[in-house]
Image 1 (cartoon, one colour):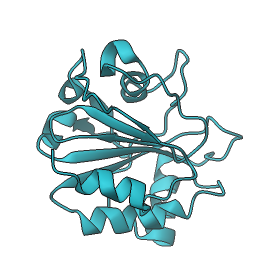
Image 2 (image 1 turned 90 degrees about the vertical axis):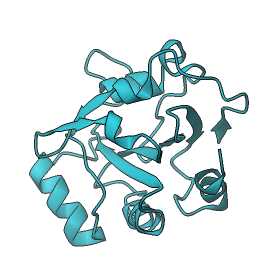
Image 3 (image 1 turned 180 degrees about the vertical axis):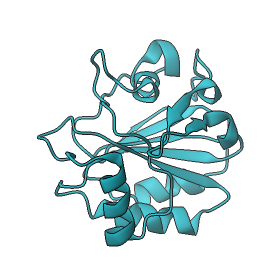
Length: 171
């Protein structure tokens, strides 16, 4: 876990970001104001894929105060080869996922990196963090004011005490 203990504010506002939903629609981050946001790069054929279940439990337990958003990616060992429609179906059938899924994209730094992950991993934009996803199911937590709070590695359960304590912390 890497934490923004100094609460360094971002140079580029988090709420200026947009993403493309898995159905092709626009997802405006302005709609997230006042909530904590957990952004996760995901894959359907990974050893950590059962974390979808824990992400859904976290989403259900903190509706109204936390938004969980998944970014399916195929950056690590070809573990997300399905189409956006297939990914959505897999997540719904196997894990009952109701939180938003974004369009499959790249999350590691390269020319095709998703702009949201560019913000999450570029300290000139987010204020402090340069930690790239090093595998599927890395988690980035943003607070109610759009400040990047923490990075959690793939082995950290979404329902772990370290994640829950940050999610429940009063800002």
